[in-house]
Length: 404
Ligand code: SF4
Ligand code: SF4
Image (tube, rainbow, N blue to C red; front, side, top):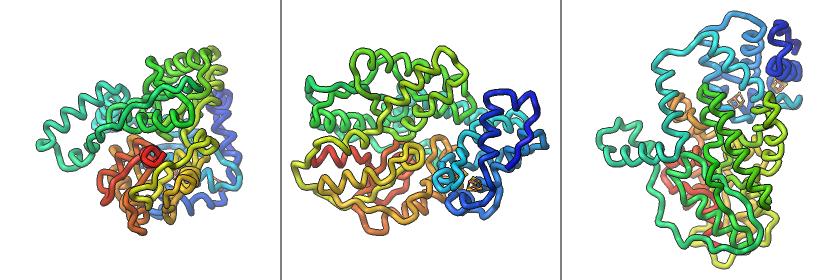
């Protein structure tokens, strides 16, 4: 597809990047077949090809409206379209440019701006999120039903902490929401990694990866978080840590994109590449490790939900199920696994109708074979699915922890 961006834009890093994505698209429409929002509405403008046209038009100077912004807002950034695209179109790179470009031109109603700022403010600091969670639980009776349902289940009492191994060292992202809502995920990771002789320790000065800020209109805050994390992890790598392990696939996928996020920063561009190369989802480490099952699983049949960020962002689809099989579990892979569950970071809060419809579809296929639980790899999917799931939802590391 030809792009004719105005000179002032075409000459910039973002303009060149957008133009490369647009040019790669041959408008075949194969991506529409896998797009969750296109499947919901059947509207070309709620599919990737239509959105590419919308963003191309906007960047070329055509008129944009609140309707344009709405179709872009509805995109989950699940990247299923990228996985299906025969031309290798990196759709999300265009969306990261086109969405804020359109928003800057048409604005956003004040209610939405306040909501988005509030979600961001609460989410990015674990202490704030923990305080909001405690308040929410204490006054759950006073919350609207929609918000009450979003309170995550309380963490289970954790088994013993991992014992130090004096073996290899890797650093572990504590994160923001996960640190407050589901500390059991990282605790399970530490115990499992200790069994293969790896000590996992959280870097004290690292924090939120920046994904929430980036997707809620605060790219500069996202860059500040990225620089802080890069500094923290560079110190860890320099001191001998072998990798940066991230138990939330959404955060890992975002950190893999730090080089793009900081491409215009001469001080951090190279450091960002080093960190992106060091990031590992736990399944990447464990797949090749001598981890063995020492007990039979109490409930072997579990449905596996590969988050979009694991499948399309990190390209690790199917690896969790393969590891679980090796450890004596009986993972169930659902039909239409490529379709997003509707979580997509803050999407569940900003687009509740679409998020709810996608979750209902996802839970229907995940529970088709009567699993004892659903396991996932991302905090956002965990919270979103658990809200209405008829069976417990867990991180897959918890299942691995129980049998090894
Ligand atoms: S599948 Fe790829 S090339 Fe075809 S329309 Fe979609 S983005 Fe463009
Ligand atoms: S990222 Fe997902 S929701 Fe957005 S256009 Fe691509 S397939 Fe559709």
